[in-house]
Length: 123
Image 1 (cartoon, one colour):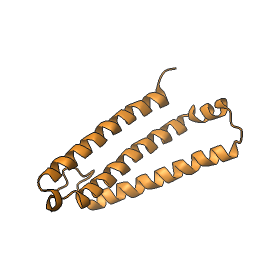
Image 2 (cartoon, rainbow, N blue to C red; image 1 turned 90 degrees about the vertical axis):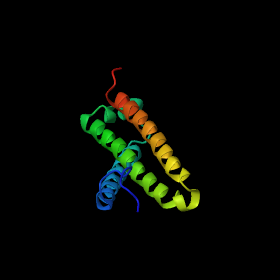
Image 3 (tube, rainbow, N blue to C red; image 1 turned 180 degrees about the vertical axis):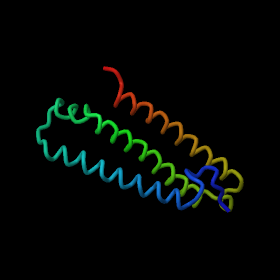
Image 4 (cartoon, rainbow, N blue to C red; image 1 turned 30 degrees about the vertical axis):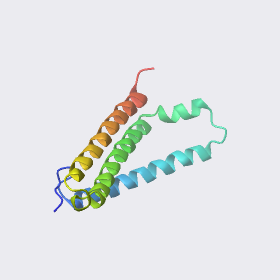
């Protein structure tokens, strides 16, 4: 039995819903950014920074960053629990899983702090 210790939520349904919601947010964000680029051929820095200077775009970008982290965590957890098993590797599988999730968490926190600084940092 796989425990929910490293899972994002307490149940598989909750994780499934978070992953689907995050995928929807990420798809919408991607379409918005690609659409903006296509609609502004020869875009200048002023146009690009003008888009990201708006509060709604900053909030949407932060939401997309948080969704990327959540989506990745659930995906990594699923892959690790499916393929890094004690049947294949013994008890070292648990250590490897926790190490991989710890590295992902540290990288994610770094990117989140960096993203907040980029979106709301002082120039």
